Length: 459
Image 1 (cartoon, rainbow, N blue to C red):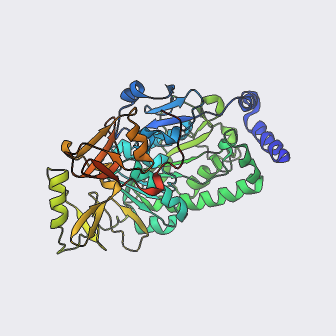
Image 2: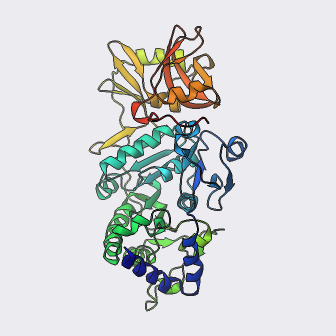
Image 3: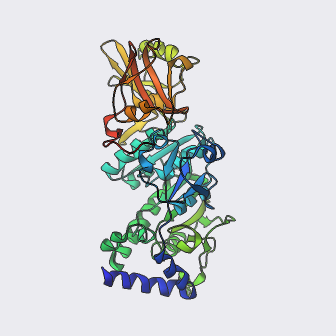
């Protein structure tokens, strides 16, 4: 591995020139750690008041923070289980800031696992519009789905698809597309030195070939006038500037859309081919000396004639959902969602504006509200993560309450005997999941795959 490290550092020296000294000095310092507040659950200002950790703002997005001290068990904290925050490397937050999704946008995150950028997009959408999150590797797609559920996102579709097939099926459908491309991961070497074991110049070239193919697929999914953001967590110009220059030379209907950024380093002309007259500007990098582990990001706009957008979703007819509607009235109250879909005894609450998904491998569309079982409705975890329920259907806990940790371990806990039936379980107002109250005891319905496995120190 020492030989690989020497080759990598030599390449960085050639890339950075005089700035290499600053880069090399960062390898004697701890890697940056961060979290991003889920603004579907909490504002950044409120989180600063209640944060159980020492934090300070990052420059890459307004809802992001550095973890200032080595904290153990951040991912086991009840607020993490409740989806109040997402553990995310600080510079990785920059891509969505540049994409700038707005409420009502239709957004595709093409290489979405494990879900950090997808959940950041969803928070910016504020439950309006549509997020399609895709991951090609099946095991990683399941992790993506789990994080979409944990963060309480109601208007997402999670797919497990090859990028080319997906983008051709939904051609011209999206306002914005994010390609956070699989890469050689050079920006992760400070955090995980063992990542160097799989690195080589040949691996860099292999990644570049795959990235070029993904980017070529992504262009089809974007509407005329739409925005495409390409990002990586690596430093090699083969995977960054060269990818973009080659893409633009092949696709004259795209151009770089510059954005004023208050962070990072602008790409230098010598980092792409200086022999060509084609010299685009507006590509942006973050190095460790900029305050993050490493990221490249560029924003493109699509010109030219509009593609034909994919057709819309057609609701099936004659579905008997009366049992679910009664459950909704009892638990949530208010007006029932417009798009409720029954398939194989599963009840889904679908987001508005859903495209035709036939022929695609859909892991989840919208909210899995529950299942029909022998003439009754059995709710699912995601229902209580995304739907606001009536006050009398809530069991409110606090961080100091020992029942909070017991619930996360999957244990049965005590509750007021007056409470009966399915209850939303919350910690300091943030939803953890649900259980069923029977005679002063709450039977635990927290999913087994999410439960804590080992007792930890007192919070």
